[in-house]
Image (cartoon, rainbow, N blue to C red; front, top):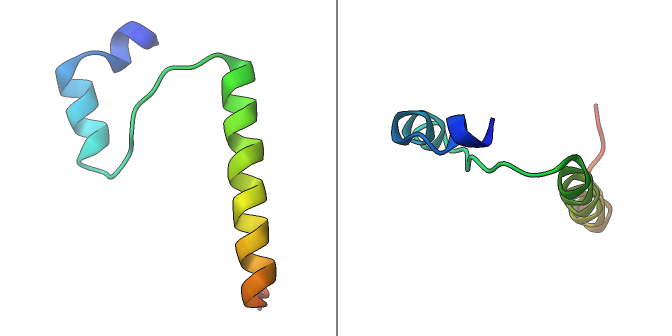
Amino acid sequence: LKDILALPEVRSAFETQGMDPAASSPEEFRRLVETDAGRWAELIKARGITAD
C-alpha cells in the first residue's frame, strides 16, 4: 500500500479530491482517529451543534 500511495498518479488522484495520501501503521492511524475525534467533539460541544 505504501508503494502504491507513493506513485505520482495515485497521489495526484487523491490530492485532486482534497485528500492527503499517507501510509501509516494501524497504531498511527488509531492515534490520528482518536485525536481528530477529540478535536471534533470539542468543537461540536463548544458550538452547541446537535444532530437533527
